[in-house]
Image (cartoon, rainbow, N blue to C red):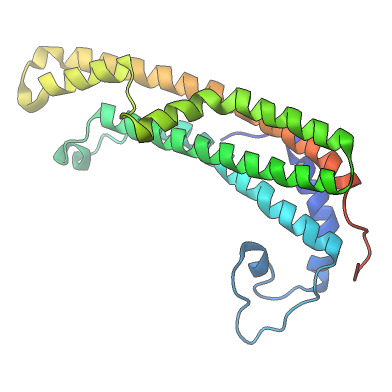
Length: 244
C-alpha cells in the first residue's frame, strides 16, 4: 500500500490542530458522529458546540477525508490486480481472467471519476472561501489547480464516460484474451491454453504498470492541492475564538 509524502498531510494536520480543543472538551461515546452525519447515541449528553473556526475545520477535515478514501480505493485496485483468485467458484460461474481484469479496471475508472468529482467540489468550496475573503491570490491559485485536475484526470474520466454511456470497456490485450478464453473453453483447442496464460500475464502486467503510473500522478496532484489550499484556508479562516 502507498505511503504518501509528508506534505500530503498538510491540510489534515492543520485541521487536527484546530479541532483538538473541541475533541478534548467533549470526549464521549459517539463523539465524531455529527462529523459523519450520524445520530448522537441516545442518553449521551452532547458536548460543547463547535466555534465557527472549529466547524470550519471539521468541514474541511470531512471533505479531505473523502478525497483520501478515493485515493485508497485507487491504490487497492492495484493490490487486487496482483492476486488473481484461481478459485473453483470462478470456473464454476464461467468467470475468466479477462473478466477479472476488466472488472477491476472498470471499478478503477469509476473511482477515478468519483475522485475527479470530489476534487472539483472541494476546489469550488475553497474558491468560495477565497472570494468571500477577497483573496485574489487564492482565487487565482484555485483556478490553476482546477486546470491541473482536468489535465491530469480528463483522459481517464473520458474513458469512463465512454464505458458508461457508449460501450463496454475494452482494449487489444483483453480482446485477444477473450478470444483465447472462448476457443479454449470446455477442453477445445487445449494446445492454446499455454498461449492463453501468456496473454493473461501480458495484459495483467500492462494494466498493473498503467495503474501504478496513474496513481503516482494522481497522488502528486493531490499533494499539490492539499499544500496550496491549506495556505488559502489558513489565511482566510474564521477568527479562532469560541462563540465567534
